[in-house]
Image (cartoon, rainbow, N blue to C red):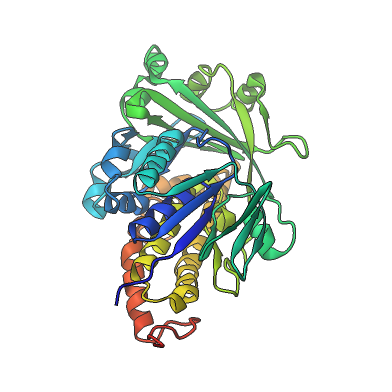
Length: 435
């Protein structure tokens, strides 16, 4: 008997929605992405592709295309804010590929998004642009759209980001993003401009992820686009006016904040001509990502938005898409649709919660005030072999493989085997045909 084919509607054409679309259409189903923007495109700056998401891109045969516009950082480098002293290193080249089978990459967000859009369209995903969701009928299921007819599908996935309409409809009340107390300056400078300054040439010539850690703030910097651009992210206390989530930055204010930091970092900040600052927000953990009707679920930032300190937000959304896509490869009959969403949430929720909490906790490690705890953190980084809970989380012998060794395809294979044995908790018992 041939497997059934379904039509899945995905709300949102961000990285998570595109990943889900690619995964599901590769499984042989039909996908429509409904995106409120009239034109597809992505703004922003650098983004990191760790091994856990690079592995998915490799399975989808698009890793080579991704890498053609990416940079492989040689090391994670944690530095003191005072003088740039290296406190800890974690090798990535050749370590990532030798240990995990795939590289660690840096890419411009716009390039990443463009390649996923191209792959989704190549596979036949339909893009319904200018489609703004106003409500959801979870039982049918269908989407109510502004100034357009209702849209019907077999399953609806809400991938509409931090300010998710789908999440609010599922919860039944307003659920605006939560303030975190931090903001980010995001800047890109030309590597050729850095090479004009002797003290900055090593940053421009040797790819690495450089972190400067200081009281209430940190900086993270890395090369993009074949080494031609240098991405700078500065995390500081949130001083934006109430109800203002981004605005043009005062460069003097920025430089004053970092005036007692490493001279090399200050020289780098001197190259900035203009920038803006963005409030960092996240959401509270949800009790459930799916509707009891068994025809709707959330994914990505719509249900597990995270602070960027572990550089895992996009990777977790791509994992969501790969998991749900692999589950749709396995589905055998329509009655299993609710179980597919149950298994998806069960596989993903605990992991993403650990990542979100781990990222928030890393802020406390990076932003330690001067004093005994900061000195002890630095001593551990300099003198101790990495241990569980090590301040350099990418060198932690337990946490690093938790992040990087995850294989979405293998996790689904194990879960599906358990499901078919009738031992998967929370499912509705449709592991056997009722025919």
